[in-house]
Image (cartoon, rainbow over all chains, first blue to last red; front, side):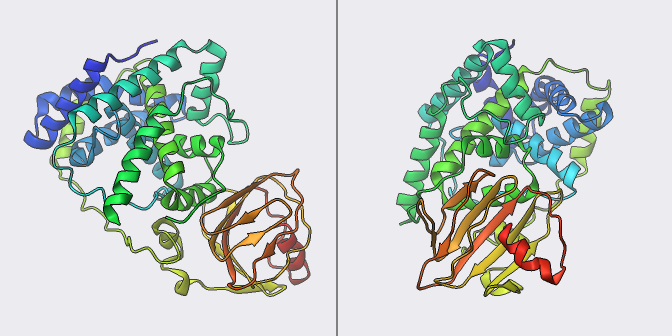
Length: 183
Length: 214
């Protein structure tokens, strides 16, 4: 089981910002070195052939470069964001069309993402990752199989054994603030 | 935001985050999440869980020239972003994408009992349609095959258990039998998806039966 250290998560954010602000290829190479092999592995476990997984992992990393300005560290860890790009790419490949996405939110230009919110969200994601790693093997496999696409929604257990709710509450508060600002 | 009382279930939210639901269900989830901050936040958490599952995957070997190939693709430039209509009408944006417009763009077809529908094109075996049920109309007692998601977009319906208003989703399985009634006042417009295989197609005498299976 590998889990990322919170400092590592902050380092990913710094690397992504360097890509966004300076088209920094060294920083990109570091992100690529960490995420691409895991993306490929994840995609293969989700039933994608090694060749397709290689191609898809590379395309995901291209999107990471192109969309680095859209990443918001107060709403997601880099691992979360990269995962959602990979998931959407996989759906595009299989369905040959874009996944239905919720209405975009007018978050507005984040002046300067709050450092406190950024750190808190990164730590909460870290805790979730550790809780996943600490689950009994059988329970963890059940969650992994849900994400690998081996379970239908009717086979997914409502009870995960994970301490879910912290990240949800944080995002919920951010949404409340946004709605308040819109009114 | 309207007051939403009936939300999506945890397995559906996780399935949406995992990207493993049929497209028809994805559309209902995306439409509901557009109107429901509670479920949007829950999806964000399941996205985070997906990221951690991905990190746990033992790294696979990339091709030797993978980084160079990726940088070469980057050098070709980014595709222009596709602008999205994001004007909320009766339908949230993801549904407008499938209808190619808002309520006025729907091509209704009558299916009996005063009810009209429009089937939306999706891949896979699950299907999704818009339904228009005249105010005050009762839908005969019916069972369900597979899972059916019904989301209210306009008006409301109620059954033995509760009232479903705009934004609410009813999640029904085989074990559910009910007699929904469209509330008086406004025609009830719903987005309904089911993963039960459709056994009939366009044969007139079967339309009533088809509707009862909806």
